Image (cartoon, rainbow, N blue to C red; front, side):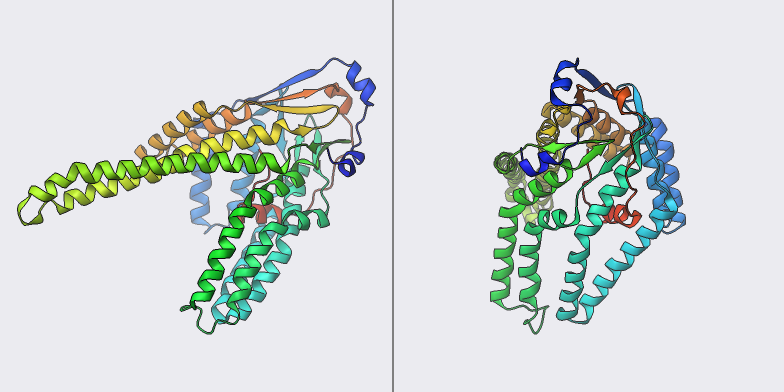
Amino acid sequence: MNERVSSQRMPIVSNSHASAQRPHHLRIVFTGSGSEYFRIWIVNLLLMLLTLGLYYPWAKVRRLRYFHGNTLVGGEPLDFHGDPKKMLKGFLMVALLLMAYSVAGKFSATAGFLAFLIVMAIWPALFKSSMQFRLANTSWRGLRFGFKGSLPDVYRAMLPIFIPGMIIVGALIPVVDPERPPSWYLATTLGATLLGGLLAPWLLWNLKRYQHNHYGLASLQTSFRASLGAFYKLHLKISGVAVLVMLGSAIAVGIGVYFFAGNLAAAPGRKGAPTAMIGVVLGALIGMLAMLVVIKPYATSRLQNLLWSRTGNASVRFLSHLRFRPLLWLTVKNWLLVLLTFGLYWPFAAVATARMRLQAVTVKTRIDPDSLIGQIRDDEGDAAGDAAGDMFGLDIGL
């Protein structure tokens, strides 16, 4: 455990006193149903369409309150207290920021590069604010959670993402015609992309360490004990699964071509060509679907177990036992039903996935939960950060 981080932990009981107490196991149970969430989802969707997206913050609050309110920790539900009006301001601010970046790139490469620098300079701060806002507006038994990460720490955590991006965008400045870049720029872009792939586990480790080192409830604060090597090991395993799925996809395409090749060869006037093409397309679609259906559940299950089983402190720890096979079968079922219902099954799929992921986690604590009641709540942070977290696709927790 990092000594600097450990020294900042403020357990409300001493280690000796904590070890003397009987451990409490707080099970996490999700009580939501697909039919209930479907009604919320369809109303949110219709109102967002009618308001051209402006209803998004209210839709998000309704969604979070439903999922939080149906997540019981030790028999007590979570709650979300975010103000949609504040979130609307943040949503509009981030939308304007992204529009300015998009417009700047239309004028010149230099303007696009400067806009990119501005976005990159603000992004970590918005990410930190997103964490603060979400957790400060989440409560359990009347206690607000908190996030205690600092601004310098988040910039250090995101360092791996700056390096490839700066190389790619910076190399574009001397290019006269960005639509026809020279070969050296293409080589530079390829090299920076490969570098980004090599740095991806480092970036993920940095971000997760930043998040899981600074979760707080009352005077308790978590720490993160997973090593960088564990993330690279997981990255190699996921890559290995991806290679196996790609090989299986290639075999599926080959079988499709072989199966329909006879029609192509035997049919006069090459009338079998469309049939052979169907075989190729079907094989490719099966391969792409296999990539989505297999790799994501594997990565999700392994990453969740790694993250939460290495999060805690002397008084509280988390245990996660999310299994790959049940999640895989659930994902296959969800995909099939979403496709067959033209997307209408999606709310049911979201509820089923949330139930499986949440109920795989248990909280083990040596502190009586009643002793935490009445502790000081954290600051609320900035609603703009919460909007940024969603628009950039940043993960802010389980």
